[in-house]
Image 1 (cartoon, rainbow, N blue to C red):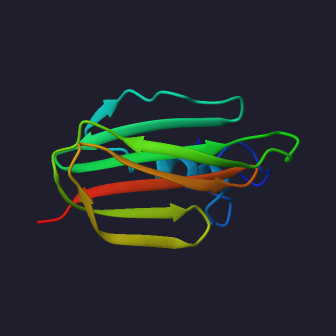
Image 2 (image 1 turned 180 degrees about the vertical axis):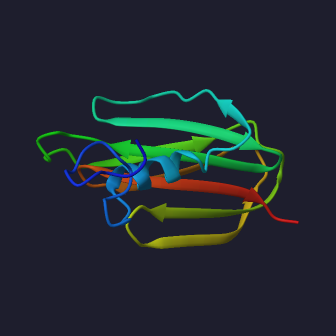
Image 3 (image 1 turned 60 degrees about the horizontal axis):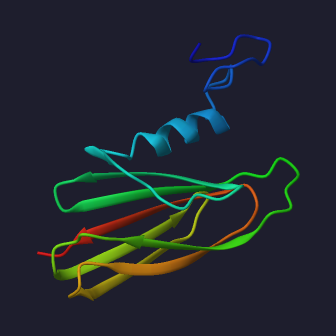
Length: 130
């Protein structure tokens, strides 16, 4: 069901129309467009899914720990990239957006790390600049 009735249930909206966590999860997954890419190196708590549409790559990282204890510095890399200049955008779900423009790729790979507190989701987007 999309909207809860008078008693809260499994809807993505409350009875009054407010967005629930489920709504945000679906909205985040919907940002993965194009062809799904293989992801290597997931851990015990960190999971990932990635996609590519034209010259735009999207990586969704989730660090889920039901006990809320696991935090990690998570390395990630994009490989087999065409050489060029890229913009890397990291959106931490719940607020902060960090953008790095003018990243030069000359060897087909871009490597970075991101700090992931427990129960955190980040969307990482890499775009070839015109």
